[in-house]
Length: 138
Image 1 (cartoon, rainbow, N blue to C red):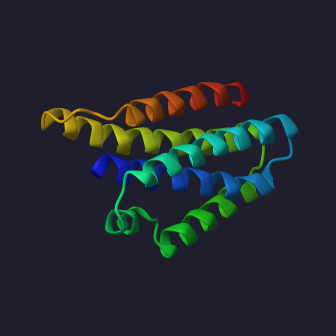
Image 2 (image 1 turned 30 degrees about the horizontal axis):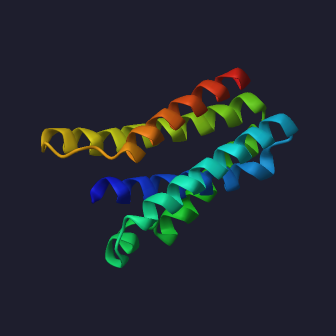
């Protein structure tokens, strides 16, 4: 199901983004927060992965070029400004992109009359919660 591919793709990219940002985080409190957010992303990734067949899983994986571009973008962006505010803003932007792509899948399912899996709704709630928490660092 497309929604599970999107969940897997989204959470894999989110966890990787956190890994890319971590070297620039100097505040232990912020570091612990985003590490806990990464754990949640990895849990959703594992659960979503269980719902996919081998072909769907392969389709859901981020491509090496995408990973490289993400890492380079974070390096350049965080390298110029590694303040808590800027790093939190970068993570919020990533969560907003995740919300957009997952919501599109949810809307498609709704239009097609297909039941939306609880995992998708739960992920959206987690993204919202993560954003609200990160706003404290802006």
